[in-house]
Image (cartoon, rainbow, N blue to C red; front, side, top):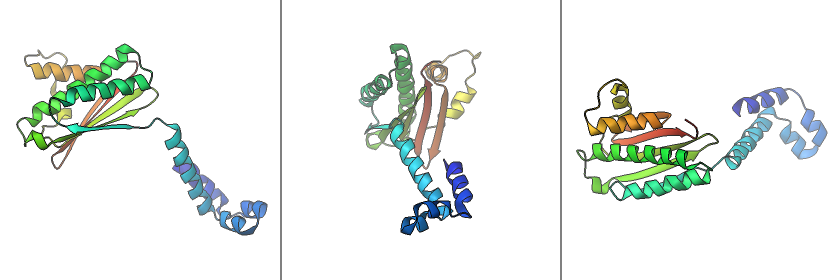
Length: 191
């Protein structure tokens, strides 16, 4: 998008093609390559935002009641994207495991009754990317997933949960910023 806008703007910068064709005040305005490039960038941004699927958002408290809310939210997203039952169940499982991991980690942290959970889902043609944001005090989930080996024996229930998350999600990213946790997972329609 930026490349097209810059290329057209630079290409028209030295010539007065549009100004000659249109004439008048609009021709003078559009004879500037920077103006044309800016208009193309804005037009392409509006087109991409309007033609793509919209991201959806759910906000709730970080507690046990959030699990059915997140589950029904992800079911809506999967059905709206035309996913079959198997793919939708994979998405639901990834959402559940991500939420439970954040809840388990936050139990040792701050007062969870005030913690908020925001789930943002971005559907695309081949995948859905749910992002869970919370203020829970948690260890970095992405680092823990790195240490879980396929060949290591699973002795803890939480280790099994992390293996399920890694198995069903295409990517798992966990970031922390001043006590705010952001877990982003991507689930593909076809594994």
